[in-house]
Image (cartoon, rainbow, N blue to C red; front, side, top):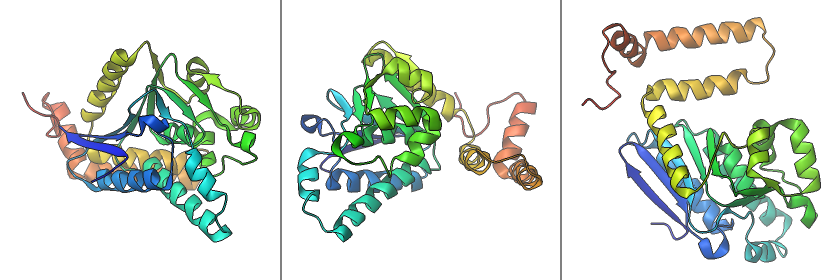
Length: 263
C-alpha cells in the first residue's frame, strides 16, 4: 500500500515505520503524504489503541530530502504553499491523534524530524541520538514544526536551538523535554517502548482521548472561571460515561476493567 513507510497493527498497537534508510528517512512530498494517510487511518481504526512512530536505518529522520528541496527551488509560491500545508497537516494529525503516540527514536533527527518527535505524546531515544533544527543554515525557518517544538521544549530553548542550528545530544534533548527517557541501545529502546505501550494499554481508551483533549484545552491558560468550569464538565461527562462507570466498578470490585485483556 505504501512505498516509503511500513505499517503494522498487532494487539492494539499500531506501528508506522519510516522506511527510506538509504535517504536517512528524509521527508519528501511522497513520504509526507503516506505518513499523513497512515496516521489518519490509525487514528480512526478502532483496533488501534496506541500508535508508535519508528524508523529503519541509521537515522530517525534527517529532515527534508535534498532532491525534494531541489525540486521545491523551482516551485511557484502556490506550489510551495501547498507543500507546506500538506506537511503542516501531517504534523497536526499526529499531534492531535486521539490515540496516545510514542516516538521510538533510534537515530539522528534533524529539522522536520525534530518536529515529528515533538508531536508525539511520549518520546524515547538512545543515548547516541543527535538533534538539530537546521533550517536557518539554509536561509529558511522551522515554521510548520515550530508550534510542536516550542510546546515540547519551551520558548527559551527554542530561541537557542532554532537560532543557532547547532547539534545537541540526546542527553540535552532529555534535559530540555524533547525526550522523556534515554536508553543505552536499540534492544533497550524496544524494551522501554514496550513498557510505555503496556502502561498505556492498561488505561481506558476513551479516557486517554479525553485526557489528550483536556491537556490541549488547559495548557498555557490562566486558571479562569471558564477553565475551572470546563474541567468540572469534563470529569462529570467521564464519570457518567460507560467507560467511566466500568472503570470505577472494576476498581471497587477489585477486578480488571473490560478494556484490559483478561487472563
